[in-house]
Amino acid sequence: MLLPKDQVLITESQLSPVVIICAIVFIIIAFLSVLGRTFTKIAVLRSFGLDDGLIFAGLILSCAQTAAVIVASAYGIGQHWNVLEFSAKITTEKSIYAAALLYIASQCFAKLSVLAFVLDLSPRRDYRKISLVIAASILAWAIASEFAAAFQCSLPYVWEPLSSQSCFNLRIFWTCFATLNILSDAMLIVWPTVIVSHIQTTWKRKVFVISCFASRLLTIAAIIAQIIYINRIEVAEDWTYSSWQSVTITQLVQALSISTACIPYMKPFLESLESGMMRSDDLRRRRQGSKGTYGLQSSSRNGSIPLGNSQHRSIPPPLVLDSLRNMADTANSTEVQADSNGGDHDSISSQAKIIKQTSSFAVYNEPRLHIK
Image 1 (cartoon, helix red, strand yellow):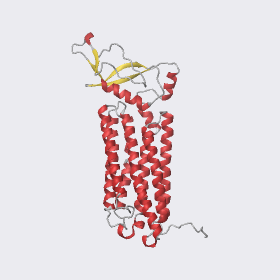
Image 2: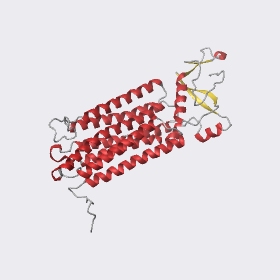
Image 3: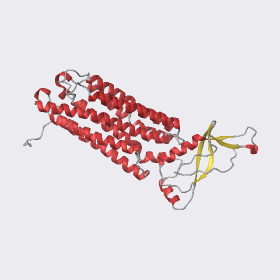
């Protein structure tokens, strides 16, 4: 069979096409995930926030990283080092160097996007502070890793781990980076679970919401495989050929990190967050002239006590996360206390003597509420 002159066959000693094909497939999956996330959020929430900007930044960095990997694979990755020309070796080393820096940045932005989303879910101020601390830790980890990867070898040839005389052990560095990557992903599963467990909704909805964040277990599994293949690279002998599996798994990790960050924006998930609140179409109908009520719940020291019916006026376009956070703030700030003597001396008190309200909606209490 006749083949074009520039077409490369996949053989035992030529695995570059495998890396290129996998890299393209994985970045397409990441792109479609972000695209679906954006359309879903605009359709349900009609908003574009910080988390969306962060995930778009992560996607752009991932596309650039994939391009660098494709160039590296076209010139050397998946091929034996001793058959490469000198110019091909230099191009491969520079491309892998650039891909490493872009990979670290894309991981950072994908994680920060999840945390920005979690920050909107946080019902309490101390929860938001913890979310910010986690975000600062991830940012510090990424900056330190970028600095280390940028100066992995002595100047001026920082991209040549084989040619330079003074380079640190790249196998140890990437193993440590991957380990911390696993720990940060685990935190992005555990911490949202803690927050969601305190949101007042049914356990069925809680389990569904938590399972969306738990999808990052797929990323953790891929990172474990990445660590295994990193330690199989023969750096001193034939690293361009022995690293093709590690490079491919790295592309998978990158795609999963972005894709799993988009899963919580699925329409069923966003609708689950609307539990206890009116749906978007109902809100639109109510804005057009009709009025309605729904019950909020407030957490007291002895349990959850219904506050009764509330009326909504001048409701702006539905922002589910803002409404959820406002509901949680109201629930955490209001305490209903009953007089020990009972009777007509029951009273309602709160930390601020009022129920907090934002521009999203207003909540009005009945002037008196009796607790039996």
